[in-house]
Image (cartoon, rainbow, N blue to C red; front, side):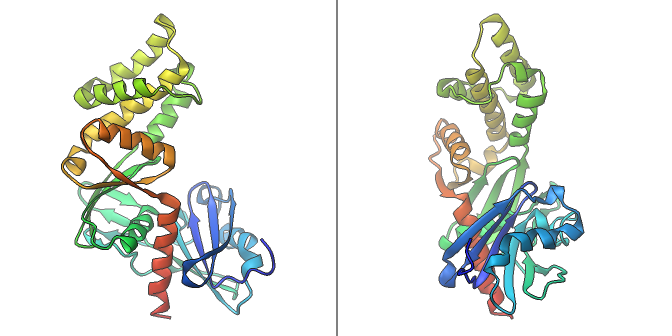
Length: 303
């Protein structure tokens, strides 16, 4: 960051554990970026503004700079709650909530999340990636899958979020790998692609045996000296396979696009390919920025 950077506006992706900010120029170009560990989960309400200003102060050279933020910053425990929009709702990010600010140098707009009454479900942050994807693919009808800690399967039709389901597969992987008996049998890194495929197939065909299959990972490391890398791949495969079994109505016979971290997206792509589904992919960071840019462009029409 240098004093020569003069942001037209600032895009912010503020999650539970990380804060990411981007100095934006005309036409959506990124002039600079910065990040910190000041995630929502570690801040009290009074800490949000100082944490943001500490990161973006060198970019502020106008009388007032507009900031567009998405993610958990808009949760009930965040800077200010940005109420959920109920599905079905337009893919665009709706009307942002203005956060209270003591500094006259910024005005912070927080994008609302999306909720579903039945079955109960919510999202914050993913709606911005969805808006970013549709900004570049306005005629898309199909399924957007956003793999992560809490993976979302989202039905898009006629420019609306019709319905969605969330699966805690990523969080379950972390809990089982780090805090259960499987921690002794699952390596921190390494991979066995063949074992991953076998586990996906097993879970898809017999998801009711999940609990037994999970303990088999521990047993295999004791009985047959199965490697930790194989255990890691099989744990991932079992969880993703069970998720695909439950999410079958979302992906079977649909156009599917995966948006997320490269390696995780690759795993989902391989798992879907084993079922005859050729899913395409999109970069999560680029989609977030595209969604924030779309929100800023809409905002400039009203301010």
